[in-house]
Length: 312
Image 1: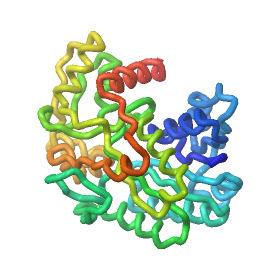
Image 2: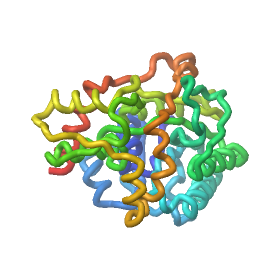
Image 3: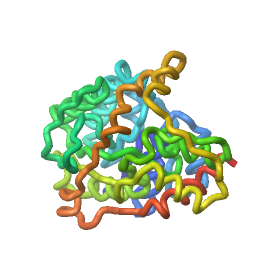
């Protein structure tokens, strides 16, 4: 891979992918709607090309992707827009991929797996989603697989890290850096899995760089599972934050949903905070070696530093 484009380059995973590709000497185009944010993230780079554009403009998206070997789909749209806009989004991206004879590397979540809680989830496990969003993710995956494009799909747990602003863990850490009372999603004693976005980007670029990895799904876990109580311990050990961290419960989310469409759509995904899905990375390790794995003791302080500097 010598030339790639990252769609959604201002998001948590998109920005990490853009920087990882550039760091490997790959010519990369950062594509997103917000030119100001693109400039803030990549304006000082001499090797990253900035392209302001709208993924819902099919022809201009195809033009932007021209000449790129790999198209990275790292776009994250708000939950209330999923039902209408996700099908249009994937159709436009598949069109651009076909038109340009490119390969497609998709950043995906774990929603399509449904509730598999008795084991670490492997790529061979049956996907049986029980939520609207999980069923939609599976439908989109099936559309990609039947499209005829060369694809690879990487499933990740929840992100945290620089610029991963809409993620659950970053939501908590954002309140910490502003020295406001923070809330943590779910029971503080339940262990969940999060992945540091620079680790996810390294794994994703490794996958997308290997011809034999296409036509397959890949599960990319975080470094380990972690309880909310330990997250708070790490925060306190690296800051002067002393405020109590509250618990955000499902009834609280449901109540917020009366006035906040985003929270209304999140209610069905709350199960992940009570019965977490944990990914197996055995297939990745068998093909690529050890997973990129930043300990939370390093990743959380680095995320806090990034939030401070970006919000300054």
